[in-house]
Length: 249
Image (cartoon, rainbow, N blue to C red):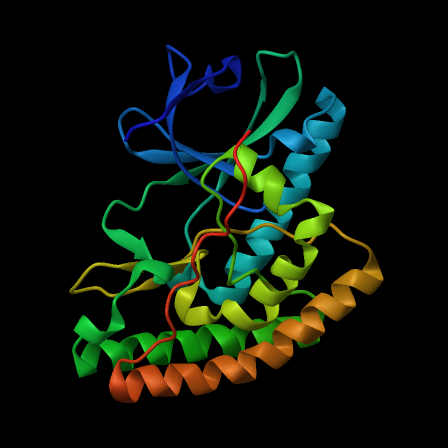
């Protein structure tokens, strides 16, 4: 079912301010333009003054440029940054990216239906992405988020970020999520079969938190190598993570 959202923040990109919500993550709401040419990413929780938004846009653009350099143009897409005022008067940063109509997130891929050649191609690309990320981590102390998290609505995102959901988030982060079920990596349709990163956000936490976070990610990459090899050989991948149950209202 199509879900349209109206807000003056979309005025630079849409005449009637109405856009379709197509996805959501840990911090971001993702919308699609009427012509289906672009997606619009909005972090409404980060809205502030004009000066704050300009600084945030510069920070986001710098991070995207670094992560694009890390993975290379073959695994990246361009990002454009606009500053706009929403219906509540808050100044927001909008991120504009090409809409990949002929691609699906790795989370949705049924690997058992792929040919051996396709699985080998995917495995090779994922190993290259891991290798590039680790080199970047050693050189900079940072790396792109190759995994991601999804939410079906703003309400669910707020629910999942509550304190009592911390055990679920840790279980999801350490056990349930893996690179073959990524929300941030997309696979283009045949015959190209190219894996592309679509999220270029940085980790907005303390230095200690980031050290622990990236160290755990480094460790999980080695687990993912095993899963990638299993996928390459047999087409088997652990089942998709089921949505969390929550009370309504």
